Amino acid sequence: MSAGPKDGPAQVSTEAIGIDALLERVRAGYRRIEAQEAHDAAQSGEALLVDIRYAALRERDGVIPGALVIERNELEWRLDPQGSHRVPEATGHDLRVVVLCNEGYASSLAAASLHQLGLHRATDLVGGFQAWRAAGLPVEPAGS
Image (cartoon, rainbow, N blue to C red; front, side, top):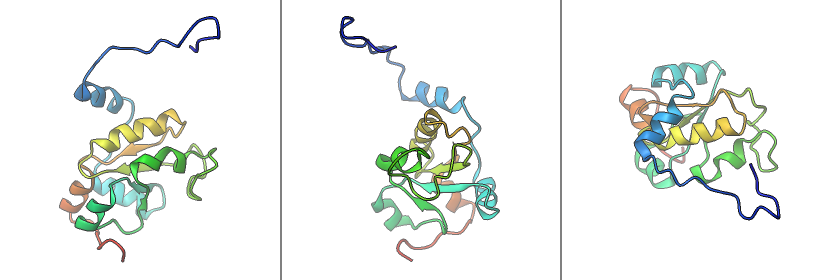
């Protein structure tokens, strides 16, 4: 509900729920996936892996071959299929996107944000990049 000129400023909810409750709430809105399922979906072309980790983590730990790197602060602009700043891979709202961060927390919030843009198949990787690496899935040095 937006405020009209006579109504004054729009009201903003001041209910504080805390990050743990927020994560629980957003994660209830979609099914998260494990590392092997993400790998298989990416290999078969059924999903686009999107790494939102910042550069220092990619430099330190490496990258997933074939994953699209979009830092968190650009994610919505790059993946919105209707956006003027979208990447070529942002082909439509049916795109299955698997977002990954370092440990699987920021990626949950990012996936929820993509749902708000209409990317209804967006999900995130349980445990993030660290779970991928622990599962023995492919990783290469950044910049390779």
